[in-house]
Image (cartoon, rainbow, N blue to C red; front, side):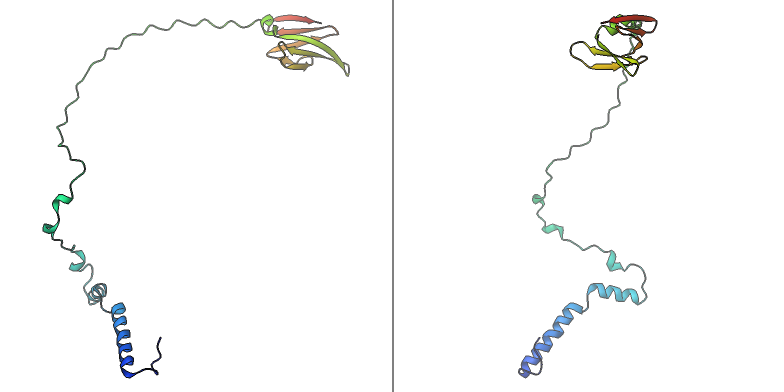
Length: 171
């Protein structure tokens, strides 16, 4: 900012005029302030000027410039759907599936082999392995494997039970 004490008189006058002009441009009357003043005078609600859209002279617009990219098709009347009757064919009832035969104890134990019997703390344990290099089980009396129960273990044999059947595995 230029101090007013220095400079010629004409410069001081131009400086003050430029400040006044800037203040008028920034804070001078505007349409918004005029509408606000009209509202404060007693006219409540919207002023007629607020509701009017600006007028546009459409005769000067190049109408060929704005063409739709896709032409609209005329709507065709909707036809009533035809009713088609469908006859239901009777499907033959499925044949009853015979109940699956429960496996026998011999079938269930076919994959097992008795590897050995261990005496530990006065109780016997059977070492049974699945054939083909499968899992190895250390089983006590009353344990079960795949639903097959270990009924009895002695020094040289194991008695397996499944439902009402019993089978002896020996060394």
